[in-house]
Image 1: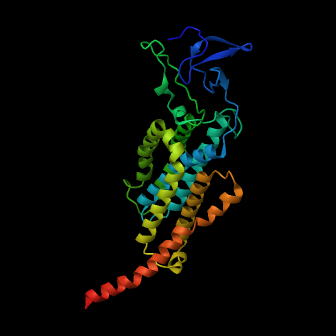
Image 2: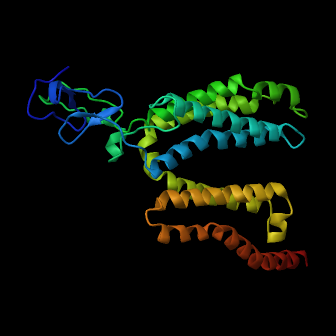
Length: 308
């Protein structure tokens, strides 16, 4: 369906092609890698992603890795000696997938990408803004106005799934996963076959919402999971926190997530004001340990009183 040439194209995302320095043709969808400008002319995306865009891509890239690690730890069991190797292999799979995804994205062969700037939430959902100039026929102008932030995540997930099935992990689990039954060895891989479609749907439906909300999601989830972990591990002091290497790894991982969320929110627009915010990263841990010290004596007294 096309619309006869008029002074301006209808809708937010319909435009005309630029040919020999002039706008020609009918209003319609812009080719991939282009979007309309204020004059309703299809313009090639030539800008580089902002820091916030890279942080969003990093967040979406971390999701499958964190889920891999969670299910590896969940299903490996305490007696399994292959958990560490599986963690390393999962990181290798995601890292290789990320590099390949960047290499196949324009400009092809480089680790950089060219993009269109995100201007508003509707840029993620152009399918909802197809105009009907005559109130009968719809002019379909659905396009990737946030090129390539929408599709690059889907391509990355596809490479992650392929790498998981083609690289070392299936063989590693089969040969080294001692202490597990044959039916349990591949459960971490089976779990990925479930969560990758879920992540794909999440990106396809909620990509725009995640783009604006992911810094707050990181902060909330990291705070909640840290509190749950420290409570489940019965960590009451710094001494009990540093006695085990695994606890330190978990602690520093959460601190990195806190810092990632703070940087994503502040975007480091003003370094002299934003960088001191990173001093807040250890705050939740200090608060939890201080609270635990105050609540521990009352808990002991209540247990002692009930014993009498």
